[in-house]
Length: 380
Image 1 (tube, helix red, strand yellow):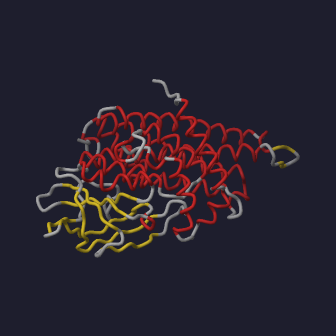
Image 2: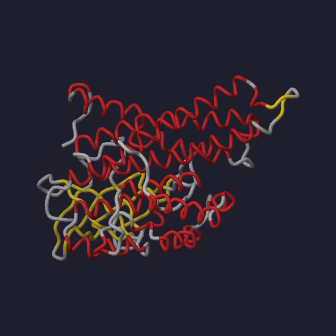
Image 3: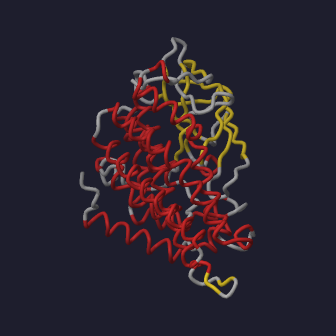
């Protein structure tokens, strides 16, 4: 398999990297910790002008008609820069669920705004006490004279504070899993910010009480959700690869400059081993992430799910360890707020928890490879 990107994809990477270096340096990222969402608008608009928010959206709805491999080059650069905006939530997750679960009328109503970045979307699947299980939500949908009403509580909703529309899962009275579009500013909708380890990955809790909603499509939404979950996993891995690679670069640069006992610490075998292990983890996670992105575009559902699960199972633990090793290379200064390396570690810790963590992903992978007796479930 050829993992080389096309000239157009590499040009896109260079454009995104140059924009982020100029407009979203680490000093800007630090300023976003604890800030109001509106302070990110200028950089978000710049990314929209580059066209990256519409990469996954069909051309008929104002997008570029690309796939996850195209988005991978953007995600990797966003991870390197620790970009705190809602790109994965809106341009990957929300766009995917609308395309996969919605009808042409849903596409026309929602996708142009997502592609242009004027509408920020996110996806709400998880509920309290269920870890990463999403197939049987407690949220309920009931018919009303003018559409649908939703009742439920969604947790760990990414970028909820800046979202205009939430695509939430719920069960219909007959037990069908369906996806619904809910306006965050509508009646019966309450957004509660949630504390997170990483300030670049804000989350929130969504409380729905007879909230008006638009149903996406008219059939069972299970496969659409499954495909979106796999795309989100692949996107998170590639983002993590960018973060971990930059953490490694910063650590190597520091090891070449920091002197201890009249010697550069990079000459110490213990530091060399840490950096070598970090490089191994980054490159293996890169291969797994790239393959998961390709599988999301071109592979059958079973292989798509296996690839995404395998990538997240490996990267979740390994790349978090890269962040921890980067802190160790820096010694005492790495534990201080003033140094930037801890920001990379926190970003990678959020990857470690995605999808229930590596333990849940390995259990799911066992179910995929060996059968349901060896794990929780097998995807459709």
